[in-house]
Image (cartoon, rainbow, N blue to C red; front, side):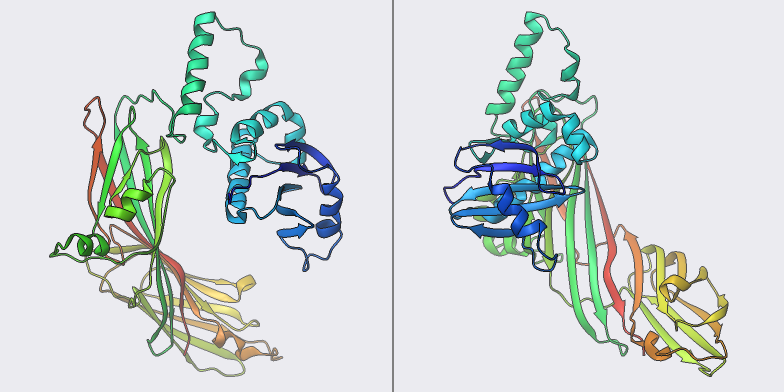
Length: 436
């Protein structure tokens, strides 16, 4: 943290009064809360800042429900790291208390102080994984359960292992009756297309999620059709290679190995977690193309002809397709006719929604809609035409970028065999087509 740690953390109520605080270094006085009130609580919302400096003290804060979590540090701390810790701490408290609020903090102040001490030491983040923290900070600890000396010895040993283990996100001794790992590659397509079909913006945001049910301390190695890896090793590939940007990994991935060799190696947390995210700036033709023509636009009615067609392979199917088409604010008496799916008018959103449960590839469907107008014309009736058509969908067993899991190797000293299950999904992101 640029050589400087967090001096103290304060949990404040809506009036700026301290609910709970933890001073890690004895560098600041409790009067800092008065400065926070002056800089945040008493100012207009448009003027407040999540980071500000008063003399040599830097204030960094977030708001959760009815409380403020404020961290202070002397000098010039790593602000991004501090905010990462604050949000991670919020997640831990929510996991323990279900809701992080004024009342839940006051009801659980003992556990709160224990968590604050275990998650940070002398102002530096330590253990932030809930599963590891729950190994030795249990909500049931208030029940005064008596332990035998042998049980106490085992418990102390488990705590010691968790504290000294460099794999802080995974405790020792995990056992599963059936060793399995599930991997989901989920891509969201952000797309903006002009009415004549020109792609104005195209972006793919990818996420690799895992559900790990593996015993012991397994070492995993994931191989993708990563262009940079093949370029680095001088290898060629008959299949498609993808060039990923802005790659971000879970803390379990060995970054030095990835930077040196482009190998994704890691010891996974137990259960569900997000292994990595990535982005691709690439021109992608619309997977679902929608055209909307307006006919018979008179003072008494307006008619739409909507055509939708899929532009991906016929073996794939888009599920739960929803096409949102804007209509004038003052329409009434809707009448719909379509050769597939259902259409509904959503007056509070000033649009009609065409819902198609399953839309196979290389197919084209049509829909007609008619609306009436009241006798008095509304202002800005033409405004609807400036709102783009929005499309929602999900295509299983398909990735728009062409990314593939080439292998997922699992090694564990006990030598068990585990079968990885891989699933691909493409979803809409901000997917818009401008109307004619």
